[in-house]
Image (cartoon, rainbow, N blue to C red; front, side, top):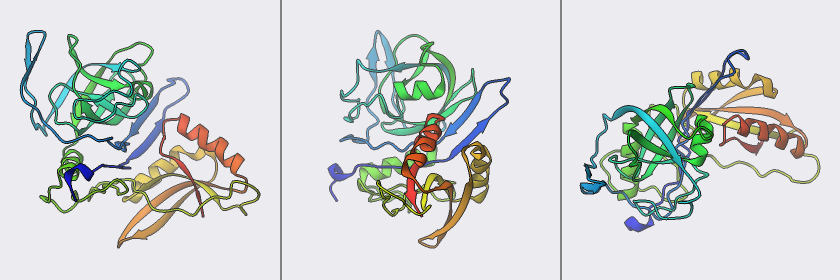
Length: 285
């Protein structure tokens, strides 16, 4: 396949939602949802460049960890090209960084409230003093600092996920888990509790579904991760963990339900998505 044909549609997800006491009123959200497809972008590191008299030196630094100030960018850049040729969408989970490879995967933790997200770095910036990363509008909302504009964060690159992304976009065959991904395939990193996509039966939008509608919130390669998510979802209804065999490996689906009426399931699905679990979806038994 030609390199230009590689687009990555990922549902690399570890979703681990922890609600603390009502008194603290905090949401500790760790959502590894680096599940963002690039739109026409390519892999690049880039040459050294100068902004406002300061030099920046892009490199493949898989040991990168930094603490500093994060900001966010929105409509002024929406639908425009990013530094690696993708289309910026302020409603997806992406970020801009001054020196990391494009694209790469990073975990950003808001040190002021404990929330954490995994983002796809596909752009250059920010260049304001003391800021180390610019996140999308949606990311700033989930991280809890959109209103205030900035937050103190910790940024760390995810090595395996970033290398898999590089291999997928360049067609490299340097490892067994990241080559020849097309726009309808999903990256699955070995020995990681990742969420995957598997085809589901269609849901009848009208009439009775005989109690076969479920909300699938996650699918994990480790049962402990599924159990952890189940505990956090107890307020949303009946929770089931369903083991399934996929290509010889066991995955554990976490589902809420069942429901007979789609409208009823949609209401609960909306609440779950609003809690930050944006990859939750309706499936049929």
